[in-house]
Image (tube, rainbow, N blue to C red):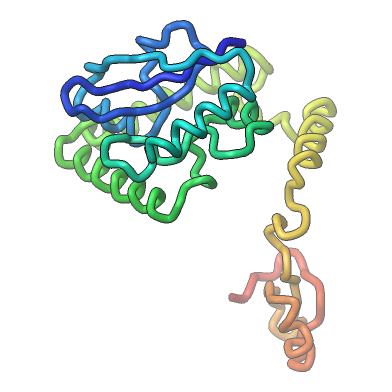
Amino acid sequence: MKIQLYVKTHNVTGKKYFGKTTRNDIHEYQGSGVAWRRHLDEYGYDVMTEVIKECNSVDEAADFALSFSETNDIVNSTEWLNTIPECVTHKDNFKYVNSQGLNRPDTWSKESRERHRQSSIKTGNQSVALKTGIHAQTPEQRSENSRKGSQKSQEACMEKYGVKSYFSIANTDPGLIEKKKKIFKDIGHQQGCKNSQYGSCWIKNATLEMNKRISKDDLDSYVEQGWTKGRVMGWPSHK
């Protein structure tokens, strides 16, 4: 696998972006940086691309990219539109980073997150003001597009599965159920602190005929007030 490390320079603004790719169409490829792509949306793709390094291994690419990022201070310099260093993790994880994209929010600094937030707000306000994208449509047009999209999805699902909605068979087909169980097991879905009920429990009150979900830390105090642990289906939930 040949990895190309490149620098793209915008011919109108002079802003730069450092990135990597394994694609062959490097001059047409626009790059994946969030701030860089927004810059292209505003000023167009009038860009010069320079390949500064070709690497044959992920270790070589990771070492060079990280060194280049630090030497040129591409995150803090106003000359560059990178929000994080290229290859921010250890080189052994480069393949993972390469497959997931380098602009992952979990690697951003607080300053980077705030810049992205403000940029998103600015872009959203511009879209509303200029009436571009979805804001150029009337409520009736958006409703009609939504209806057409739903109809198209139903037709595709009917052709593939013989039903209008995938969810009508997702919980009945044995193969799909096993597949879902495996996925949930692999990602730890609803386990430990990922569980939506984590740290809480249901209690019921026969006099009030009501259920209530509370923190487990408060259970003893509610028991003293006449509540018992458990839940009765059909009783309303008390907030």
